[in-house]
Image (cartoon, rainbow, N blue to C red; front, side):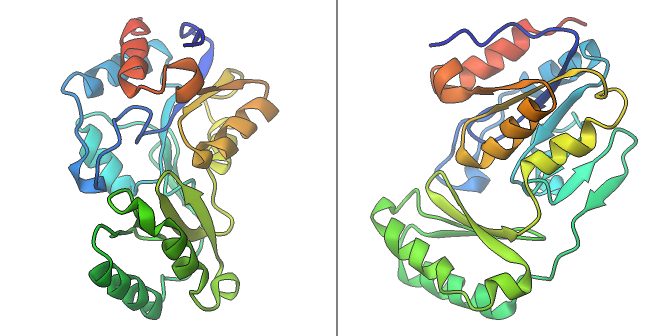
Length: 236
């Protein structure tokens, strides 16, 4: 396991959720949140003078529900929604997911055991973690959805899933917007993530003078190690 670096007071820390702070669950709604995590995040945020953000593919409502009572600036739905430190939301303008697409995906989920459809306000995910043999079929299914580009969406591969999301949303967008805000501005951006969906956030952190830490290479591919690192970093 590589050296994950100890958290420094001049960092602006951006944390992915699933696979980074939380262990991956068989289904999104089965995820477990360790009892100590919200409090550790709150204390670390105070130590960083508020320069801590959770940037996730989940919706903002689900994010807040999972980590309650802790809330922070951050990004939801892969940067489609960004919450600034003052609580203001900055959302990408998108079309609604067409009903035809949802009908197509739901029919496939009914026919293919183990396929899980996760509908979000601005995107939809097809999970095949419980049916890994369906990977190629799921990919072909989402690619067959009509008028993806015209509707303003793109397909993003993730761990055991494919997500149909707004074209112009990314975790990099969340990092860039938040780094313009106090208390993030002027700090070293550090993005911690576990998936290809986090690479845009890591790339933006680098572009802004910081770096990324990947769970597989810096934390032994174990979110428990990330949580222990966060607990050690509690400085307030």
